Image (cartoon, rainbow, N blue to C red; front, side, top):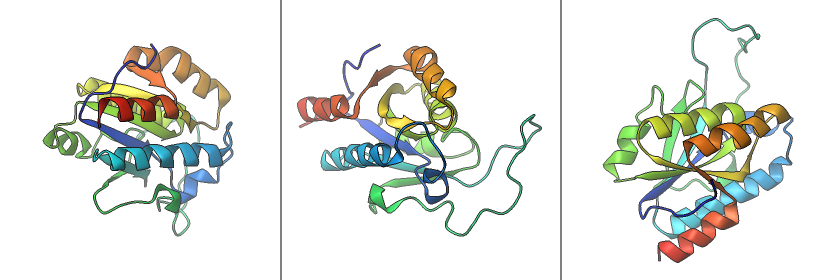
Length: 187
């Protein structure tokens, strides 16, 4: 579904743009992803709308078939990248799972602010972004996905999420579509 509207009280959620992740090999140049996510953050702040900056500092418990990181992460691995220009009014969320809502108080914080819609960007499309979008949808938020402000390490995961999962969770659009709607709908 194409992007049609933004609610007056929409929040931006940027997932896992942190020092330990932006250096990983991804399918789209990370510089462009960072630039577009930063543009979204600037636009949301300019309109007085909430910006949520999410980092990941662990993983959910349980067995998996793929090996997991068990060694300690290097110093600064969870630090948000400076290009996001974190502001004192931003909401910072550290998660231990793929999605930003599970085991955090993000839902309560957003609902206390009257947020009814979220725009999501970040890394990785098929894990952190998709899990956050699924959880937001399940919590009753309208969901918009900034598809040119996200990437993944796996092309098949990125493509599948955009083509098959995201249209079932909300609307998709580009960074510019979202910025244009902010300017038109939210003076």
